[in-house]
Length: 102
Image (cartoon, rainbow, N blue to C red; front, top):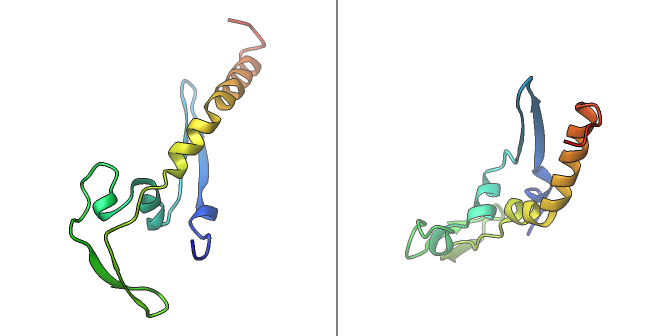
């Protein structure tokens, strides 16, 4: 982690509809995809570039890499907060439906 830019770039958007609402969570930075799914030899589904490659970073330093291991920040956050999210959703639905228990 050089700058923390990707970590701080995640946002969410709620789209409320009359019969259905959706929440979109993500980042507009390309690196967020690589953080979630990995690259090269380490790509999550095994579909990354094989054999490695060379690149030059923003500071002008050359590197050779076999890829980046997936860190799965969104997946891990969802699973860590899953029960809390369910309880909060239930609270919201009860409020909107007039406090009924079923």
